[in-house]
Length: 212
Image 1: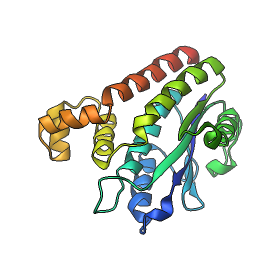
Image 2 (image 1 turned 120 degrees about the vertical axis):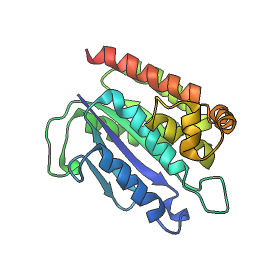
Image 3 (image 1 turned 90 degrees about the horizontal axis):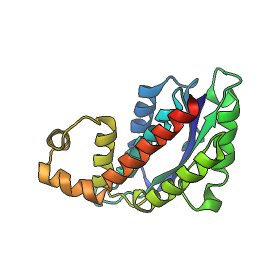
């Protein structure tokens, strides 16, 4: 079993210099695998990413979301762009030299669900071999998207640090961001960090049982 994240950047043309989001996104993907076998950017703003451990997929999708949502014009604290993604979970039948040449259930699930994003009016969905798991997790993801899609730059920056460094205290997070602990606490509530972490932990726990 693997996971595949398929996505594209929403309103990417609103950022005059695409390298502002493109280079950090490539750096993030490079931390997780090699291009083009494990990840690939195509058509300028679309991507696929293969993940060996399906239980890590939602964490990685949220990291991509936070990275993109912290990109904003210098005069604004609100991002002009977003990212649409699907997580496909399943088997892998063939490994190509490029991820676009690989195939299997995980790739099919990611592609099929991606075509449903517009109809479902959401920016993140999951498809796995377990419909009950999908139904439950997609409901929680849709609810979380109400605030995730509206993260400010400051909220997205905080989410990124919390997900990358889960053992950090609020003081350590503040040092990383260059702000005081009480400012971290305020951002924490505005970004709904507790709800994000609970959702991600529930995804891991339920999926690990299914993968046994």
